[in-house]
Length: 392
Image 1 (cartoon, rainbow, N blue to C red):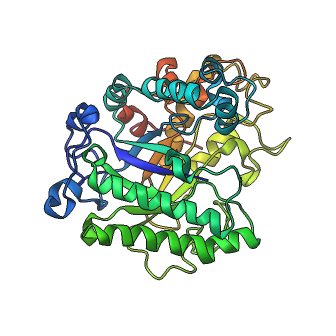
Image 2 (image 1 turned 90 degrees about the vertical axis):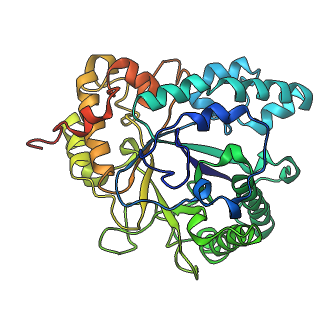
């Protein structure tokens, strides 16, 4: 089980924690300050977390920062001595705790740096989403895998309470505004998703709010609690969104709720975009994005998307590959995607950095590398003000 937190990039207060209102790099210059406690009940201006009604979230995920995914960080994984291991748990078991502690400390300090944050700001990004695993709190680590049972839920509740307390009391976290309770849960109607809706969502909600009550956090300074979105724009639950049921079903309160939508067209067949014979063309992908409607639950952020196309197309189909030969099309598709997602509350690209995927430097998964390739403009207004869908 892992969750995510969303930070504003470079803003001095939480009052506009999501949006480009008051740029100030002091938040990130202060990253290395001692962990000075903040008294949230006495500092309204530094802890407000409400979402203003204008402007959009434009951000990147820090994939593999605290939850390493070897498929997208292959060189880094091998450099850490983890080659051939399938998970962080497996690698720690192989290296031993002392060696693993040293290796991970180096990774955490170097995978994303202050220079990366400065570059994100220069590109007009205003938020970062950081996946975090409950194992960051080491006393919660246990050898038994799984999630959809009460004792595993309890570990998650304790982790969420711990994160909530840190966010509200540690000055270094003062630009965090959103905490997601679980990433990409199981899909479909089954006992696990029923248990998640009936037990996990409402209890996680209550435990986060109780932690805030204990700190005397006022209502308008509370964290947004994020869940995977499920509703269509017409309000129905039979949908093409995440599909693990209605997170509202057993909630008694949804004040400052927020919703996460993951939109990877490479694994979608909406409107037949990946159907052989009728789809799997640049025109089909562009048309789907140009007419995409991610409406439904509010507020919704498209928390993950990329420029990658279907596996059987990405390196073998000359209409898409090699990507360096089709930069202009990928640039148009990027613009179409973000314009669609900004019909809601914004977007967060997966990911900022990737490190040799399948033996290749594939910028379709890396915002930083896609900018260098010319597929994403340094000035996002160029994409927003373009017309990728004219005549589509």
